[in-house]
Length: 542
Image (cartoon, rainbow, N blue to C red; front, side):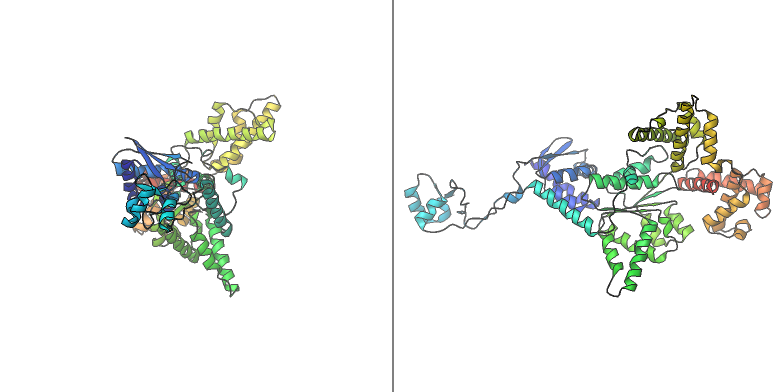
């Protein structure tokens, strides 16, 4: 064993503990044998393929700890050695050094081990300074206690046992569902990255790979930007590549229904404690994913239940991933979530997904068209294999809205229109795309009124109409008032004087001040800018 490699590995364990590394994987790491250490690589050996595969899924976190312990970048390589001597097969020390396995006739015993009385007869029957165990027993009429040999470890059996244990956990926990065909397509490979979602995507990949430092992971952004795709991609990755972790995905509505049904069952059946059983099932999860958590607003009992589950999982090193259409701070300010909840869910890694800009829309459309043509080929529908020119793809991006799900449906409509044109001997044109866009994105042509804007902002911030347009100058009212004025200017055709009239008769200069306040706030305040975009798109969609 390489002593430097052993020292480095032992120095790494306390660091992994500080990083919140999975204790089961730490135990697997301790079972490995350090066999080599170079300037930039630590090599470990294991006899268990299951251990090798599991640790390789968390190599990034282990290498981070190794590099911290070595004060230099260190990579990790794990070798599978079926012929390595397992620790469990080593013979424990036995009383009186004379002990040796009966199955080893060549085993010998030093004379000194038996004292002076045994030494003389032993020398008379042995040419050397040792004798066999059998010879000693014959000469002294004593029986040597032989150690019980541990059975060699079977790596394949270990893997089967671990898989059986995991399967048992899955079968006993009714929260674990099967991935649908549609869900199985939502992977990292099919997620289209752009500047607007790259950080969120990279964080999701790190969490899926078991990295620490992202607990909880909170992804926010308005509906239709790909949050659910990322959450499902995490679930798909873990189910496929890390079966040692029990991963459960729930929408907030499903989570609420679980709790309500458990409470109802407990009340109806005196002998049942379904609520306690549900709590145990959630506590058994290794990775919990909750989508659209804003839908728990005003469900105080469910929020309390979630808070308790969150604390248990977090305190036991389990991973939690949450998605919402607003930041944790906004959950508290607008939907009445307790500060204890918002501080906990926002205490990890927060990252937003922004509305796709032109470049990302182009990439999305190209990706959707490619996959739709592939699906058509596999389904035997040659009529949907028409290629769309690059200039028309860019025109589609100009006409498309920001909801990614709607963009995909838009692409399907365009693809079939192109197929229909080709069948008639015609070319797909911009007029065709414009007509489809009007059907798919009617909000782009809708006329927005100041009243529409005010209604939306009042609901968003939880303020009354009289307060929004009134003269009170308190902090809680200034932001929604400024935002409503800015959105009225951005989305309607009204003049500044008209806008001022709708906001309690404010002057031209006051309206300009509100617009400038909002524009200044967007600079350097990514959360505010993202929220503003979400509100703008929300008004258009409504």
